[in-house]
Length: 445
Image (cartoon, rainbow, N blue to C red):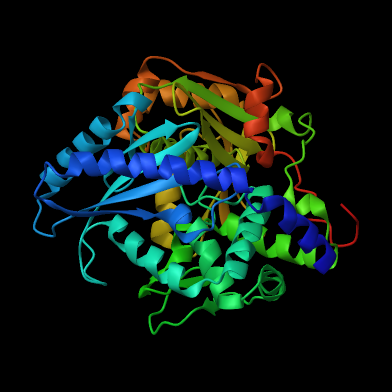
C-alpha cells in the first residue's frame, strides 16, 4: 500500500509553475475586490478562504475563494445587493455570473482559475448568521493545525474520492467536501490511516467530539462547531461507497484508485425509464434541488402504479436540459394484479374494502390467510405510457412548482435503450454499471 500511495502522491502535488500562477491570479483578484469594497462602510474585511488559503488545492484544479466580511448589523437585503455589486464590478473583465448557496455569490474565471466572491458576516464563533460565516473559522483552524505533510495527505484523499465519484458537497453530488477531507486527515493523521479506519468503521460511529446525538449512518463532527454533523449533507449511498472503496483499496492497493477510467455504457439500459425536458435558466443549485425532488416523487408514483423502482437518479447540464432516470425491474408489468385487503375478522375494514372494490374487481375471494383479495386491472401496464399520462394530468402531485411550467411546455418519456445520447449515458452510468473498483475485494483492478 505504501508504495502505491507514494507514487500517487508524486502526481498530485502542484508544480512550482502552478503555484506561481495561482498566487499571481489570487493577488490580482483580491486587489480588484479590495478596490471595490472601500466604497462600502458595511464591509470590515476581505480575506482568502477555501483550499487555496489552506494549501490543500489540487494540481490543475485550483479555485480561489475570497470572502467579503460584512458587519453583523447589515440587513440581508444589503448583504446580497452589495456583495453582488462588488463581485460584478471587480470581475467585470472576466465575465462574472451568479451562483447560489444559501445566499447568491459571484463567480468568474481568470486564466482558467475559478474565482468565488463570497459574502459572510463578521461574527463570533458560534454566532452564525449565514452558512458561509463558518468558512473563515475553518480556514484559520486548518491553517494552524494541518502540517505541510498533512496537506499533501488531504490532496491524496481528495483525488481518491474524485476517482470514486463521491467528491463534492454540492446538492448535485451530496458527497465529501474538501473540508470533510481535511477533517478526516486531521482526525486520522494520514491517508493510509483514513483507509484503514474507515474500512472497519461501525454504523453510527462518531469521528470527532460532540455531546449531541445525530441520526446519520456515520457522524463527522465539525471541529469548530461540535453541534454540526458534516455527514448530514452526504447521501447514504456515497457514505457506503466510501466505506467499500476504503476496504477495496486496503485489500488490493492500485494506482487506478487515483484515476478515472472509462466504463462500458451498453449495459442494463432496456429497463431505464427516462424523462427529458428543457427548463428556463436558473441557478444550478436550484434546478438540482427541483429535479431531485421531482425524481423522488415520481419514483413513488411509479411504485404506486405497480412498477418496482430499483434505482433512480437525476442529471442536468445546468443550462437547458434535465433528465430523470428510473431503473425498473421491468418496464412492462402484468395487466391484472392481486390487491390484498384485510382479514375477514376485521368487520369494518373488510366491509370498507369490499365496498370500494366490488364494482371494479374481476374476481374477489378469500385466501388461505383469511384475507380478502380482489383481482384488479391496471389502466396502464407500460411504464412509458403510465408516466406520460401522469405528467399530462397530475403535475401538481409532488412535482415542485418551479418545474411545473417547464414540464407544461413539453417533455419526452422513453426507455434508455432507444435515443439516449452517449454523453448522457456517461453522466448516468452509475445507475446501470457496477463500480468495479468498489466491488473488487478478491481481484486486482
